[in-house]
Structures are given as C-alpha cells and as structure tokens.
Amino acid sequence: MKNSTQLRLGILASGRGSNLQAIIDACELGRIAAQVTVIISDQSDAKALERAKRHNIPAICHERSAFQSREAHEATIVEELHRHGVELVCLAGFMRIVGKTLLTAFPNRIINIHPSLLPAFPGLKAQAQALAAGVTTTGCTVHFVDDKVDHGPIILQAEVPVLPNDTVETLSARILNEEHRLYPQAIKIFIENFALLPPLKIRGG
View 1 (cartoon, rainbow, N blue to C red):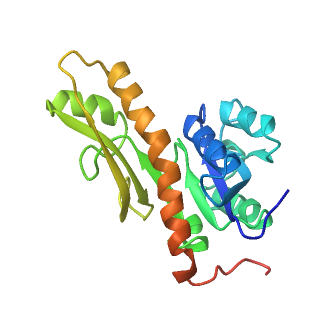
View 2 (cartoon, one colour):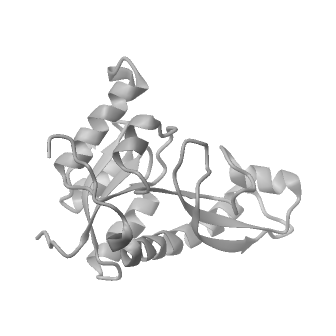
C-alpha cells in the first residue's frame, strides 16, 4: 500500500542489486520513511529485476542498445521515474555515467554509492585500486551525483580496514557489508532534509 508520507524512491541498477535489497529491506522494516516505487535496469538479465518482482515492485528494463543516443535512453528513464512519482533516484550498481537529461530532471535528487573513500579511487575497480596503492584504510561513500564520475557532495562515508592478506574479493565483501548499512542511512539523511529542496518540475505535470 502506498503511503503519501513516504519518500518515493526510484532505483537504477545494472547487476545483482544487493544494495537495492538493503534499501528494500530498510523500507519494509520501517527503518526509513521511504518506499521503492520502481526499479529500472539497462540489462535484461539483471538480478535486480528479479528482486523487484519478488517484492511486487514494478521492474522495467530499457537497454541502451535500443536507443539511438544516451539522451534518448535517459529521456525514457526520466519518463518512467516521473510516471511512478519518484522523488529520489538511487543508483545501485548502475553501470552508466549519468548525463544531463537525468541530472536536469532530478537536480540534487540522484545519489550513488561507491566502494572507496572518495575522492580516492574513483571509477571502476576501486577495491583493486586501493590494494595497488597499498593503503591501510578504504571504505565506501554515498554522494550526490553530478556531471563528473564518482564526484559530487558527500552524504556519508564508512571506513573499512585493508588487511595484510586481503584480496579484491575479501576486501570487496567487507566493503559491501558497510555499503548495505550506509545506503539506507544516507537516504534517511536525505529524508530529514527533503523539505528544504525546491519541488520537482515533472514533465507534463
């Protein structure tokens, strides 16, 4: 049942959706005053879509190859997000750079989680970057999305120690545990400050 007092979330995911699951669980357990109203993927075989269906959440796939441009692809995603009344867009393993079309439609309303303590180790394979650099501490970051990769104002960070015998797999697993804890907390912080944002301009609204 939809609750008008809950923040309406739209999740963009390309893969297995473990952070998506953490967000769904936090919503369903009442840990955050939010509801996932739609999940959109750019990959038809994404397990995130299966998770959506198990929780009776609309699951939509728009593969990039079906569109002539990134702008056209994003415009369709924006339409879906607006159709489901989304107020905050959460990237959960969405493996595409967000462009102007999405950023303009949801100003200061798109957040992402990244497996490093930004600004350190942006981009792909952040855990491998941390190991190669020989750091003793890394972690994860939830941040607002802007027009640069893994950039934008930071909402929350959590530190994770790098152990002497760590591999990419063991380090990634420990970071992921923190991601699952941190992402719902960041959404809660957004909710607490939600009233300060100007209203969205919804196309056709």
